[in-house]
Image (cartoon, rainbow, N blue to C red):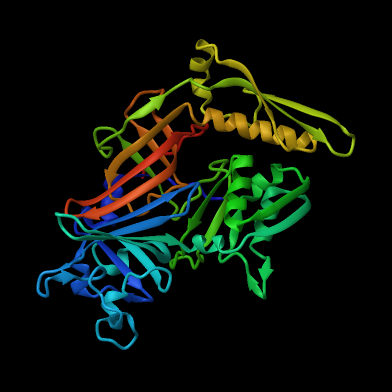
Length: 413
């Protein structure tokens, strides 16, 4: 059972982050830090993660050499300079895609205090040849992009989705594991899942198939980087965004208060597309008969943002949505209906581009508590996307989130 952390205010976090002074980043390429002369040429670094896409980063680098009056990394190289052994080779090929492992770290103060945001590879070089400054944008993706190299066809019989996810991490191809990371699941959530007669991965990349299964069940996927203090390896989480647990990289849940720690917050409360019940229809393969299962907001397994149901009832939401899905048992149809309705209620209150001081431990897949904005908007929010930026203006974190208020209160540390 997961330990639920106390709420951490930014005044408390400030002490751990040196008062949020001296923001710093490191980029390691094949284990070596960027040379100081290259580091000075980085204008901006951005890291972005999301629960439904692969993590990425981008460097904006000065591509103009004032001394030699030529482009520094790309745009002036010769064929000979691109050959190993040439003295210009390391600089000309420093940011070339695919060949090197890259680690991005962000935070404050000394190197030992920086947080690993991503390990992956350069994938794109995008120079800008304009009348303005010569900028090179270098983009990279985390290790999961390697899972889009080969498509597979696999099937599972009488397995739960969490069992399928866990098994996927064990499958091999040519003696090597197809999946580069261990996959962790929520045991409590798996206990509520029902085995499915047949699930097929049909000529799909492993990561795309896993995202598909997550969408069907209303789950999320994100990478948890290694934690040297606990010895936890880098791993991938597959499971619900919140059901009695707080997933994340570190046992911390931030408390953000408007007027104190939140610099910009633009929430949206909407009843559009909300419904009282969901019906899923399918076909029972054994009995050769239709399947119909309906779930309403009264179902105890929904219970998201219950305090806002009053608003929904006052607005007279749509009575029902009916969807035809590839489900083959009554239990499977009911599980899908629950996932759809729960997902709908999570969209009652959302917010985009929420701005706070740079928090390297604030990532997609985590929960924050937002208060100071009234009863309808205050509460617990699940982070769906974060963007971390360090440039001449300092370190800023922006995030998208959705309100997922559950029962139970915790105190602030």
